[in-house]
Length: 391
Figure 1 (tube, helix red, strand yellow):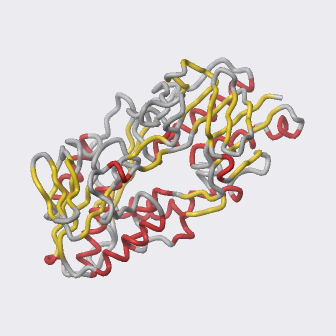
Figure 2 (figure 1 turned 90 degrees about the vertical axis):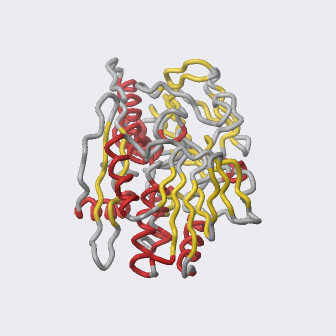
Figure 3 (figure 1 turned 120 degrees about the horizontal axis):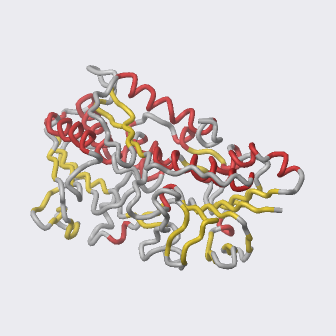
């Protein structure tokens, strides 16, 4: 029996598990192949939808499903805190979990995602609000926005990398449209603090820069955070201070396997940019793949990127199981939905899915109403299409 072990039941893990269980259902039934999935939680969460939760575009139930509801029953699935990964021995091909159970493998996929470290921002405790960290935090943030009648709102991203780097600017655009529709916009000042010069590739950056400027949102790039002064309600940077009545923070990210020998000092698991095979401190292992947000710090971390990487990993494991020598390569397909306008009394919303890859830049684009509709519709389709490897 050959064994495929998948760490993480998110989009990448579910796609690969469902693809292999479907294509090798006969081998699984005969006992020739075993596909196993581990996750420390029993619930799957589509975190990409958190951007919209504060404004009521989705309900909690739209973004949460039991993992077992979308993983094939042909996959051996172990869920819960006892199956949190505590050690990965690539040389011995073994994974140990919190409950003491040891799993062996012939092929390993690491798709454990990213985690957050709000405590690493100096001074930020009492005034921490975010739509990144959890569904509950997103709901709480929406409540605080609705309670405001005016004041300074600061959207702060302290450092890169983060998952879905387009989300903070999308949130800012939707926030502005919300205030124009339901509040007196002139009573609010919005400041967007971003730690690097650009938001995405040049064509994406050009559109969002223009959009923020037209909305009279203070757009500060290459912002270097020093601390958050909670007593004075100030975000302090190397080149200036920004007062806030509501601070919205995208917390620093780290890999979910921080502290394990296979990861770097920030918890990211290094992988080859073309094959997605493990290339890290523990050595080089062709039977080990790393995909999605868990991968190298330098690789873009978006849902679209994870989707393309899952397709590559699933196909290559399948080919190896079939004895096919030729492999497919990850060509750097990346993407991020762009939001120009959210629906309001004067607009039906505009958006577009921006996609690019290694060596092929994103072309200039114009968002459309259909782009917003497709974007909104996709989150309802996600569980029965993407998660099941049907799209």
